[in-house]
Image (cartoon, rainbow, N blue to C red; front, top):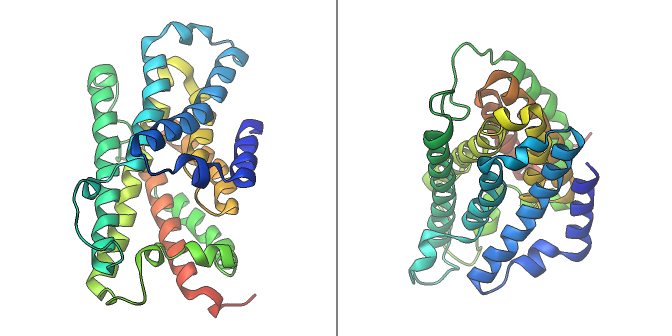
Length: 286
């Protein structure tokens, strides 16, 4: 928790993600992004191995492969977009920005799904279903209750300027000087935004927890949560802080159920509620 707090402090104090990671050179951005993710993940991982007396993990090849390559794969998805390879005209045109964002989310999802599937086929196929894809016999009522509890805090957060500047996410691609998008594009944008969380849940609550259960047990959860914090460094600080607790909770759920179903429902539900809250802005007062 202290390491997560330190990362949050330094990121927002010195704008590490915006001013240091993101540069014009994609290769350099990738290496710097990998370093941020790796430090966020590796420090608590090594700490729990030593603190919980699980030093045999250091002798596991899979432990080191996951520790190094998981941050690398996610760093790649953070700087890569298939449409970057093409000169598709003015980046300010709303419809082109729309396709750019959609392609980014879909390629990110595909990369992490393929990576986790490859590890599963090589390591865990004989022992468990693909990380988190056990959807049978799990009640969904508790997760609907979680979403209901989150309604008021999200609406309150939606009144803040920082929140409204970030949500709904489609604001980031809309230029008022160009032709607005139609209703179909709005719907497809939100569907793609929600679908992207399938990759997030498989990667963080599925792969990073379940692939290490036979090596670390429950102690795989907190390093995953700190890693999860680091991918929120571009978000409002409140959201970044809350991601540690949300990531930990969803990790605990996936650990005990061997399923990402609940986490996926909660994550997508909260994401869409935040979209709505950002859209309505100051329409509500409490």
